[in-house]
Length: 210
Image (cartoon, rainbow, N blue to C red; front, side):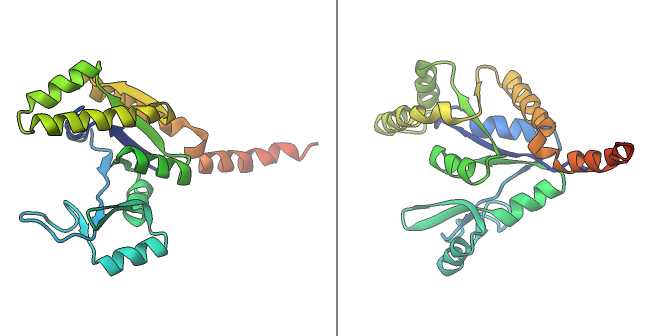
């Protein structure tokens, strides 16, 4: 029996290690696909169509919004960013579990529109550890780090709206937790609709004697 893939939305504070976790998960297991966002901004040096983004004109992107071809979208600095529905559902129909790395507001949009999606929040062991990781990168000013911590404090207000929390303490353990959690979703009734219908149909033969 072929299984439909699971839509997995991963969020977390800046600096918590989401990208590292997702990369390690996809390197270890081959049944995942990473969602590719669409954007109305121009490609930067080295960026490739269909690899880093799907690049669209502003007019095309706005048409996608009107035609409800995006799972979620937002506008930043006069450019649109969003998740094309066609790509995600094509991967799911092929049996891939699709990972969407989305910020909190976008994730909640998805949950409202697609209740079957599983929302997972990656958290640091402590707030102090989050600050240490941000500082340890050595790529940002103190002002930028403080801005990221302030944003984390705001985002934390929505943590309880996620389905699961995974604490990124040790990378390998975190990756295994994430993988096992996602694979368990295949047993949810919402992902077993065809199996349920087939079973109902096959069992009808036993109702003839009633």
